[in-house]
Image (cartoon, rainbow, N blue to C red; front, side, top):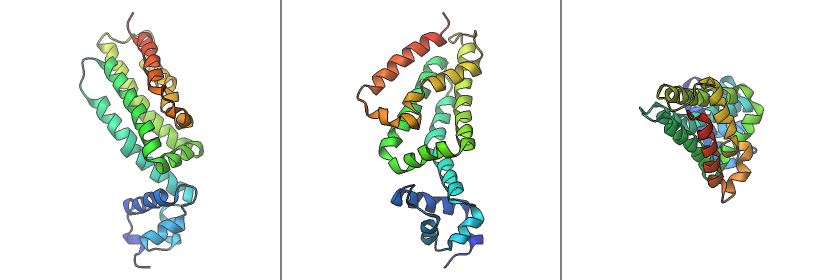
Amino acid sequence: MNKLSSFLSKTEILNAAEQTLRKYGPDKASVTDVAKLLGVSHGTLYRHFPSKAALREAVTERWLEEMIVAPLTEIAAIPTTNALGQLRDYIAKLVELKQHHASQDSEMFKMYAAVTEESAALVEVHIRKLLDHIDLLIAQGMEQGLISRSIPAAVQARSVLYGTARFHHPAHAYEWRSPGIMQEFAQLWTLLERGLSVQ
């Protein structure tokens, strides 16, 4: 062993864990595999993460933040005079990102899907970030006179996120291969937009 646990950073461990998960898959990758890659004992890693599940959650949390939340945060922060249109862009990007990673980064997406069933706390934090973005855009749309004030922004935000879940929730990933899936999303958004708009 050529490293001491005190020299290992969280980033180093997560980088090694992600590399191992990509190589072996989330089901077969072990803490021992990660430790071998880092040149330490598996006991050393347990000083940083108490279990394989905790390590998987940490890797998933970072992946979600970098691959999903960060690009969506950029969209939500763009100044706009058409918040309703930007809301559509935001949800479309969420759909695009989830579907892209499901097909192009399958091992990490598979782990993300598994962790959503195992860690309610992680999922809750992720959803809260998305809802905050959507709530912000809806509130802006209300101020611009584009979105109805008849229902509170937070309630509308939940309706939009959960109403579009078929297109971005990992439980529906098997449906995303359908050739008409994006046409169906466009049709759904037309209905949602009518419901959100000032009549």
